Length: 238
Length: 186
Figure (spheres, one colour):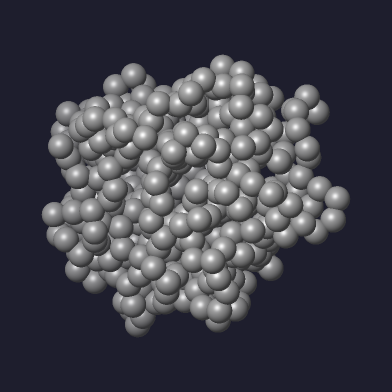
């Protein structure tokens, strides 16, 4: 191949066991949707260390404000959600795509599959995107999502959450997760939240109320940092 | 050091997010390489289709270059090719990617890897994504591919897209059970 010889770039650290569970019988939909055969361990190659980006200029100036996407203001409690995308070493992840989607203030998604008997809000789609700045920072303005029931078990309700999708610098850093709000009474009852067994690890998904982010006379602020897989300290020899 | 943020399921409503994205076109008229269409269906452990999955792909251009700073050849990567594909599966569990056949890319040992596409599967009921690869049936280089070599011989076929006519490849993904696709820890 007419290309420079590749020196092995530093690999990404593997996720510790238990951080990313494959299945949880308490979350019934996992039962038939996870492999029974063991995962095959493979080396990280250029195919996994590289990864997708997203056209920055396709992210409009108010794509990160979910309260300004329609003619009127959505109903509900306006909030600011701000944080940084970091790697495991605390280094910022700049210029990466962060996307969110969520239910409206009543706990209803603007999605044809959501049959929950709660009103749709014509002024709320519930989807936003942002590109992190040089410090890895993102900021969204949105509405606090409502709780909603789901069919997993009798009287099952999800804690309020915002879905987050992050590309990160490579295919290996791709992360889709959910951000929760502090003190939600449904935490002990939710199989998805509790699929992460270690309480300290689970708490990384819970945002913090932050008076510093709170805008006077306008909106409460919540802070939430997202930590992606980081590189190993020294390059591995090929 | 801070701990990584755990993964959570995309749930059933990620379509709200995907619909707002700019474009899913990977290829334009100017893109170099052989046009191909990859089609497949996603199945669960009872052989039922999965109509609410997010399938994502990442691949090199027709010369085997990734448009990414980590690839020393990135400077000559085809600027008209987008290596990132994504698809919300249809009611029949189906997905389709209109792309180009990727070239061979460097392997972990200084050798080459056979042309391939890396694939992520996310869905309601999947707490963290599952990662697999797609190889092409008509590539002799598959026999020397260092990643395929790590896969038990009797399961390698689950990673091989079948040639299904001019420029068409068929690649089904089975999450569980008979014919279960090989997924990777990487």
